[in-house]
Amino acid sequence: MEDIGEQVVCLIAYHLLFAMFVWSYWKTIFTLPMNPSKEFHLSYAEKELLEREPRGEAHQEVLRRAAKDLPIYTRTMSGAIRYCDRCQLIKPDRCHHCSVCDKCILKMDHHCPWVNNCVGFSNYKFFLLFLAYSLLYCVFIAATDLQYFIKFWTNGLPDTQAKFHIMFLFFAAAMFSVSLSSLFGYHCWLVSKNKSTLEAFRSPVFRYGTDKNGFSLGFGKNMRQVFGDEKRYWLLPIFSSLGDGCSFPTCLVNQDPEQPSTPAGLNSTSKNPENHQFPAKPLRESQSHLLTDSQSWTESCTNPGKDKTGMSNPALTMENET
Image (cartoon, rainbow, N blue to C red; front, side, top):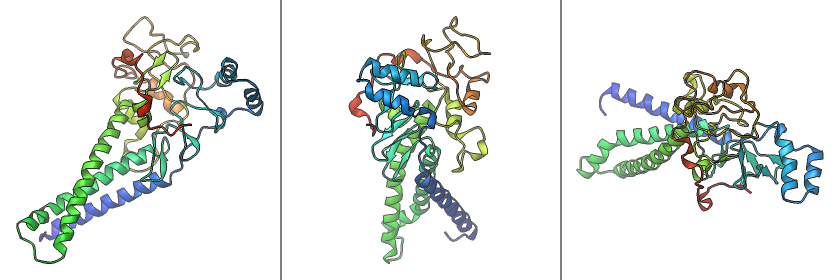
């Protein structure tokens, strides 16, 4: 590059991408995973009662009584209450126990060795931005190095050691760009469907059965659940996700006989097969408003009953759960 203006633009773009890459990477690594709140932990009396009861129906009855006022919808593969023996708590929806961290992680996606941290509710947005900015960073380096890479093969560069550095830099940036683009694209698809990596391999199980789209509210609301309502924060590694990670709006397609009636102010839609049931248990305020605007369910859950009976292969699961 001989033009001064072009050099300035490239320097500014390079350092901007590098700064955003480092910032999002730092936030992904050092943001502590969030754990379930105290309301999901059993009381001392409930723990004693649970220890006295043998595994089976009596054991489940204790857990059902403890979970009756909690905003949980998902169950185990056998239909039981999801309970963590290690942490001695009832697992919130989308929460899983990480065997590496040895704790339950809210909306756990996976444990990432590249950041030495669990990716979950508290840092999933940061992880996505880390993938995005690292991809842009590598693509920028490969694009600006391409002309010199071509000159390397056409003998257009001075015969110095620097030309081998140019070749290595291009190959490294290009290879990382390919791998990062596939990973980033996969996680963009997960966000659009409101799934975690674990849920993509093993569909969540509700009381009425398996539903791979049980948490999907439509593309727009799925995006807002991760990135928040304030669009000016979407591209910055600043926490703006909706909710507290313990409760999530669900796209219920069958009325659950064990759930209480539809919340006040929301009319039942059972007469209209194109509409879906609203969650009956309380949601946090920042999650509840996703259900109240006029477009709430018109864009959600196409073909919701398609996966009622199919279970994902447990052997494929990536979950580090005890």
